[in-house]
Image (cartoon, rainbow, N blue to C red; front, side, top):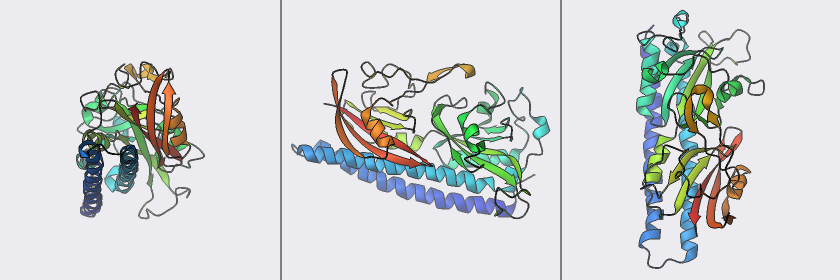
Length: 344
């Protein structure tokens, strides 16, 4: 089953609109962030208040960027989930553990849609279609599908969330977890896909609708990481973006040569790793992964951001004094948070 001309047109229009919005927003935010950072570097003996204001501006802009990126990812998945090729599950009988889904040469039309999403939006690490029971149907890149440690992911929080009675099979954004696909901290956005005939406006509660599966995007916010790399932070600063449980999706340490530290379980991933009492890490031993999530739930600034507050506070953690500038991020029905940590 191929992509119809109308379907291709709709998807292309959606991508053009979203990519244009993405480009304009990125350019505006990047320029503003660079200006805010530059004021710290080049101003002659700037007042302390100016430095603090710049930190608040950076945090707010990154919070807005994060929300925009997650909203864009959700919109892309919702639009493409309505495509007839995405709704096609005619190869379900070919699902096997040998391929951790269907073989690479089957359902090329759906794989093409997934690859287009990955090409046009760098915040996605992977795109999957799963059956209603949580079995993987396809995954792109295919190499990531084939190396999955198991076929069924019904125990994942994204699956439990999207299928929960409270969610009523609506679009669901999961807490941060270590992805079995990309082996990094990520969030999953899951969109229920229904066979609604010619009427895509029917309510999911309509009994005539048939649930075909879930269109799932693995999101790692790579573009946000890249934007943070462009900020000339001091040597003792760290930017974290955490979910509503306090687990880090983005963990940028300026002392790591200005590079994003992919190994969040490394002892050097946090400026305060040697002093902060962060025993609550969540491993993934059942997936034979060694990575763990880094929890910042004990920071008072994180607690305040997750409660919906923004501001700045001085915290002392095991004798280390920090200035924490924080801002909440609305993600679905939850508050996530961003914190800029500066040793003082």
